Length: 591
Image (cartoon, rainbow, N blue to C red; front, side, top):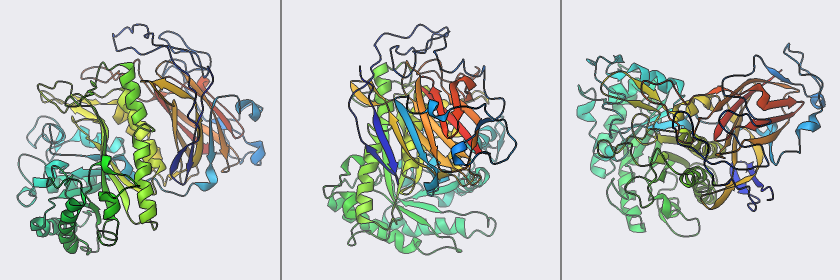
C-alpha cells in the first residue's frame, strides 16, 4: 500500500491540508496480552517502523522507556551554518547531514527566522467550576482537614498546578457561575470563595478569570466584584484581568437560544455590564469576554450569532474575547457514548482524530475565517474556555463527572494544544475542563485520605511547560505526515508543535497516535544558530491506550527519558523514532 502524506503547513497560524489520500492501515488483530491485564491495542505493518510489542524493540525504535537516555547534550554541529559557536559541549562524530533527510515518509521543516508570536500561558488554563468534586472534595478540603492544606486548599494540588504550568483559572463556572452570588461568599467557611480563589491564582502564577451573572440586574454586582478585587487595599497584588458576562447564555445562562433575536437580547445584557466594567479600576483594565451560541452554529457562509455579533450594529469593538466551548463529547447521555476505560480501537481513533483535524482544527479555522474577515485588526480573540474529552464517568451511579484519565486523554490533549498554539495570534486562552476529579482532569483525589493521583494529562501539561515559558514563541513549520486508517477514517498519524525561547532554545513536541507502530520523522532546522545540542529528550506513553495512574500504585504513565537510540542528529538535520501512542518532547539548545 502506498505511503500517504498529509502536508500541514503552519503559515501564520492557519493549518492547511494539502494532500489527504492514501493511508497505511494497521490490521485489526489485537495486541498480545499485557502482564497487568491492561487494555490492548492493535498490531499491524507500517513503512515507518516495525510494530511495537511487549518484550521487543523494533529496529530504530526506543528501547524500553527509562532504560536509556541522553547522559549529556548530543551535538548538532551545523557546518552549513558556519560551524561551531565555540561553546564547550560534546561534539558528534563527523557525519553526513544528507543521510538524515529525505528518506522518511514523515518530514518536518522548521523556519526559525519567523518565530514572533508569543504562546500565551493562558492557553494552558483550566476551568475550575463548583461542580462535582472539583472544588469541594477536590482542591478544597477545609482548614480543619487532616489533609495538608493552606486556608482549606490542598497543598499537593496547589503544588501540582504549579508543576503543570497552569496559566489561567476560570471560576466559579461554567454553568454554576450564572447563579453565583459573590457578595456573601468572599471568604466562606465551607468552600472556596473569592479570597481563596485570588490567593490560589496568585500562588500558582495564573491569571484569574471570573464569570459573572449575565442579566442586567446583576451588572452593578459584577462591577462591585471587580472593584473588590482590583481595588482592595489589603491585597494590592490582586489583579483580575479576565471577566466573562454569563456562560452559555443560549442554554444554562438564560435559555436564549441561538438565533438573531437571542443575540439581540444578549446584546442588551452585555451592554449593561460593559457600561459598568469597561473603565479600568485602580489602573487595572479588564479583558471582557462575550458569551456566544453553540459551537455547531458557527458557519462563515451564513448569518449566525458570531457573524452578527461582530457587526457594528451589535457588539463590534466592545468584545475583547468570544466564548468557545468545544468538547469531544461522548458521555453516557450521548448516543455514541465512549467509556473512559476499556474503549475500543475505533473509539480511540475517533477521539484522537477529532482532537485535531477531525473536529477541533476545522472548527477553529471556521471561527478564524469569520474573525479575520470581520475583525482584520485582530482585536477580538478566541477564548476556548471549555475543552476536553467528555466521556462516560468511571462510576455513573456514584459520580457522573469523574473519569480515570488515560494515555488516550494525554495524546488527545497534546493534539488539541498543538492546534491552540498554532493559532496563538487569535486564541487568547484555553481552559481544560476541569482540573480535579471532573471530566478531563489533571488530578484525582478521594475523601478517605490524602492520596493524590496525577493523571497522564497532568504529565502532558508538565511536559509542555517549555512551550509557554521563557518568552517562548511559535515556530512556523511544515509537517508532512503519513495517514493512518482508524474508525473507517484516514487522518494524520503525527502532529507537531515547536517554539523557540529567549535563550534561542527550541522546544519540539511530536505526537504519534498509531496504536501499533513506531513512526520515524526527519526534521530540518532552517535558520537559527550555527549548531544545536539535544539537551533533553522525553517521551510520554503507556503499556496500552487506556493505561492510567491509580491510587496507591506506582505511576504507570509519566514522562520518561527517550532512549538515545531513538534519535540521531547531524548538522541541521534530526531524525526521531516515535514510539506508538506517544508524545515526545525534545529540547535543542544553541551551542
